[in-house]
Image (cartoon, rainbow over all chains, first blue to last red; front, side, top):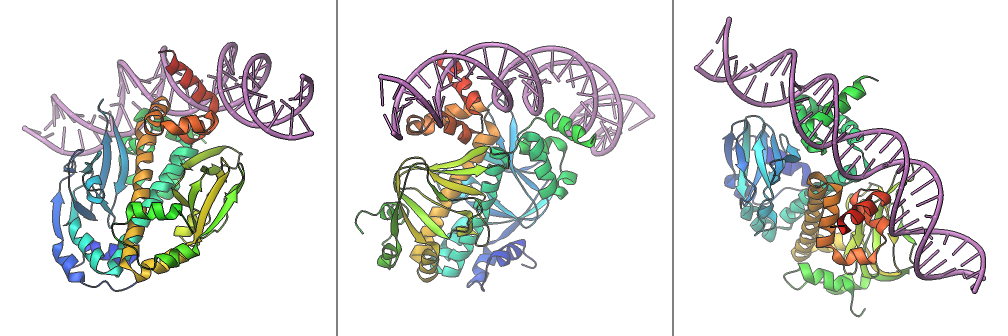
Length: 193
Length: 193
DNA sequence: GTCCCGCATTAACCAGGATTAATCGATGCC
DNA sequence: GGCATCGATTAATCCTGGTTAATGCGGGAC
């Protein structure tokens, strides 16, 4: 399994060689998903962890009235999972959909659980990944809590400049908690200065 | 050290007896803070983890213009920490302040780090705590992303009914991302139906 | 008891984003 | 090429919450 994105990911957080690496690597499969295809849907119980090898995934809350709000964008070498992966029993409140043709590495979470149960090195890696994840969610909380829509866009511009080129404006809007028309107006307003 | 809140907390997430429990218990001190007193301030580098034995703490973002937004409320038997605890180096972007006279158990995070480094049982507990924390932040993300201010109050009412009795309306407002006047209007509007 | 002070309440006015709808442009399909 | 579709843009109108300010209320300090 050459050049696993999972390896890059784990190496970034691991501070030591990981025992039984092969057990993990061998458990990984790779799938291709077309742009627009969904990886899992709200309500699914999927216990896999996914690592994006190439492409771009969005995690989406869909409201009863059909509105869609984007929880997060997952680009290359980042990971994501359905809620039931980490809290078994829980069903996902959100779905995952490819925004570009994507290659996903995935493995059953039980493999990681068992490695973390056996080796403290793996437990530490899980810890680091969780910490990273928690920090991101905390930052997002800060953005929603302390920034107005227009400032949220400025924040997006300075922290994820690539994304702005890469995804349609309406999706940026859904990520920032604004309507597409609203975001467009904000952008035009900013351009005038 | 009788009836540690820390013990209740750890027992809730641990699925097995924790080795070297005494090492942890002996590292804990208890402090009293008066209502209104601050536990740490934005910018502090505090590497302690705090467990609320009694009372109520709020974590607060303070903006340059003086506005205050509440990141979270920490009631009895829950824990909190400054950002630098988990990501050493980072300074807290928020402060912690007692809303009621409170008793806090606290211990240096390095003690937990070292226990987690030695015993996989402790590593698993850290994992469970982090997971719990991440889930809470994720839920908060969902609330801000998919709910309008008025619906956010409804959500608060159904998920934290106690809190509504316990804290001033203006703090509920700061928690929900609305101004005090705004929240009051929402509440009155709801009462009329 | 009286005085203060912080919080809740209310009202008047403002503003920024939501909504609706129409137009335009680019892309992909046939 | 012609057509359908989707997203971006723009405009008109609405609405909710922000802002400011005044009043009231209740608890604590003295």
